[in-house]
Length: 408
Ligand SMILES: NC(=O)C1=CN([C@@H]2O[C@H](COP(=O)(O)OP(=O)(O)OC[C@H]3O[C@@H](n4cnc5c(N)ncnc54)[C@H](OP(=O)(O)O)[C@@H]3O)[C@@H](O)[C@H]2O)C=CC1
Ligand SMILES: CC[C@](O)(C(C)=O)C(=O)O
Ligand SMILES: [Mg+2]
Ligand SMILES: [Mg+2]
Image (cartoon, rainbow, N blue to C red; front, side, top):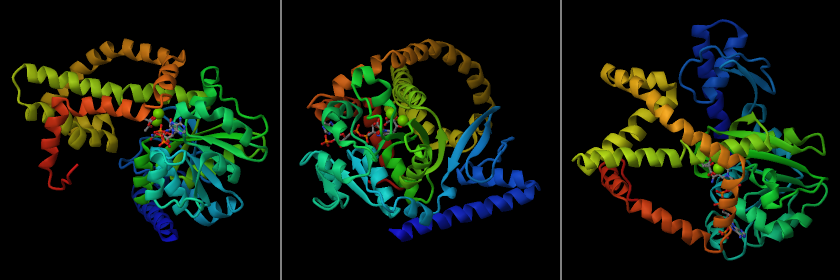
C-alpha cells in the first residue's frame, strides 16, 4: 500500500524534474519554472501559452485564458502530512458504485482509515467484498458505517441519497463532516429533501471523470482533476479538509467551485458532449454513411475508431489546433467550414439542455428513474439496446483486430 503511494510521489518528483529541465531550456525566471512544473505534472504535454502563477506554494491562482481561478495541488499534501491530518478520522464511504470503488481503494492505498457502508447483500456488498473490504471489519450496513465514521462520504446514487436521507440525517451528528461528490442532493433540496444539519461541515470533492479513471490514474501515479467546494463551514477548516480529502481519494489538481456550479455543469456536460451528445453524433453520422452504401466497418472506422484512437487523443494532448495541424489541408479546410454550421445547429439544443438542468427537470427524471427498486435492470435493458445497435456490434469486430485485444 505505502509502496504504491511512494511510487506515486516518486513519479511526481520525476515529472517535476523533467519539467524543470524543460523550463531551464525555454525560460529563466522562477515564476515560469513553477508554471512549467505545475502544468507538466497535470500531464499537459504542450508548452503553456502564457499561464501565470501568483503563488508558488499552497493555493495557486492561475490565469485560465484571461480569468484568474484558484487551483489546489496534491504536491502540497505529501503522504506523511496527509496521513497525519486524518490520523484521528474514519472515512465512512457510503455507497460502492464507480466512485465508491475508485475513491475508496485510493484512500485505502494512501493509508487512510476507510470503511465502506452499503446495504447488506446488495450488488455493492458483493463488489466491495471482491475488492477486499471485510464484513464486520471494514464493510458494514449503511447506518453502522455512519455511526463508526467521522467523515461521512455520501457516494450512494443521487436518487438513493434522497431516499435514505430520513434515516441518514439523524446519524450525521455534531463533529462529523458530510462529504459529497456531486452538488445534486443539497442544491435541488426542494426535490431531494436533503438538508444537512447546521452543525457539520459540508464539503464536495467531485472527480471530473469516471470512478474507474479515478482509480487507474492514481495507480499510474497521476491524479484526476476534481472540483472542490464548501457548502457549510462550521469549523473554519472546511476547504482545507475538502482539499486534503480530494488528495486522499486520488485527485491531482482541485479546482474551486460551488455546489451549484458543479451540479449544473456536471449534469449539462454528461448529457451533452461527454455522453449523450457524442452518442447522438456518432449514431447520426454512422447511419448516413450506412444509408449511402458504406460498409459497417468503414462507417465505424470513419466515425468512432478514428475519433477515439487517433484524433481525440491529439485534442487531449495539445488542443484543437494541434489536431487540425496533424490532419490534411483538405480536412482542415472542410472542417473549418463545417464547424460553425454544427455549432449553430447544436447551440439551441445546448440552451434547452442547460435550462432543463437549471429548472430541475433533469433532477426529477433522475430521482424517479433511479429511485426505482428495479433501477439496475431497467438501466441494463436500455444499455443492452445500445450494445445491440449495428454500430456497436461492428465496433466489437474492429476492436478484436487490435494487437492488444482482450476479449470483452
Ligand atoms: N460515476 C462516476 O464516475 C461519478 C459519480 N459522481 C457522483 O458520485 C456519487 C456516486 O455515484 P456512483 O459511484 O456513480 O454510484 P451510482 O450512482 O452507480 O450508485 C450506486 C450506489 O448506490 C447504491 N444504491 C442505489 N439505490 C439504493 C437504495 N435505494 N438504497 C441504498 N443504496 C442504494 C448502490 O447500492 P446497491 O448495489 O445495493 O444497489 C450503490 O452502492 C453520485 O453523487 C454521483 O453523481 C461524481 C463524479 C463521477
Ligand atoms: C460524465 C459522467 C459523470 O458526470 C462523470 C463520470 O463525471 C457521472 O456522473 O458519472
Ligand atoms: Mg455526473
Ligand atoms: Mg461528472
